[in-house]
Amino acid sequence: MTDKTAPVLELTVDLDATAEQVWQALTDPQRLQNWFPLKSGGDAKPGGKVLLSWGEGVEWETHITRFEPGRHLQWMDVLPDADKPEAILPVVDWYVETSGGRTRLRLVQSGFDPDSDWQEYYDALRRGWTYFLDMLGTYLEYHFDSSRQMVYRRARSLVSRRELWTGMLSALGLGMTAIEGLERVGEAMPLNLSLGEQNLAAEVRFSEAPHAFAVTLPDLNQASLFIELEPGDDKPSCGVWLSTFDLEDGKLRQLENNLDQLCQGLIDIGLDSGNQP
Image 1 (cartoon, helix red, strand yellow):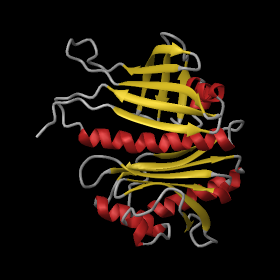
Image 2: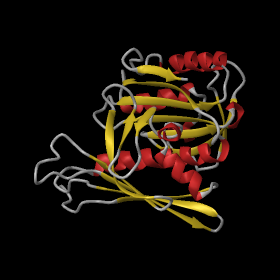
Image 3: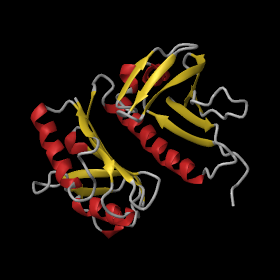
């Protein structure tokens, strides 16, 4: 039965950065694309628009409807039916404050349709935002003066959700605890991203089977690997996203080849894949 109460998604993260740096990461399109979309653009000012793009078919402009420098930023996504009286528009509010020598960032997303079956969508957003906020923390702490180099694969699954989850994590050399999602944030593990070479040290940042898994990779200059099985039917689309910084081109090409091998037989990598140097 559909819950007629519209939910509100709220997440908070404490960041090792100044409020000014956090504000720049939210409003400067060049910085925004270092932790959130593959590509950004536009003008984050009152009444402005900002492009959020993850490639063809997954991009839109969000409108700036609140702009209080260093304190409060609001995004509103204007949908095709926004002019209808009953239209409910997605809204993301960002609240920035200083707390205990660190910067606290609070995200509040509203605009869920209470008449829809919103739970799956809500859970997917919660998982995605949890990862992106963690990615923001990594960017601010380690890479604020660098540009992100993305290697990614996103396509439709060739197998069932459970087979895809097990296959991906098994290919990375992870045990059954990872496959069942029993990891805890901060736990260390070896990761076989090099496929046959020496394992890489990895630190678990997020794990929720069979939907999403994220680690940071200190051996790759604090790179971040995120695997997301998107909502939908039993053969979902899958994204494998590797965010790197300051790696040489040869290493990036090697990682790209490794991702292809990781995805082999699990997703149709010819559908939508690429890299963003």
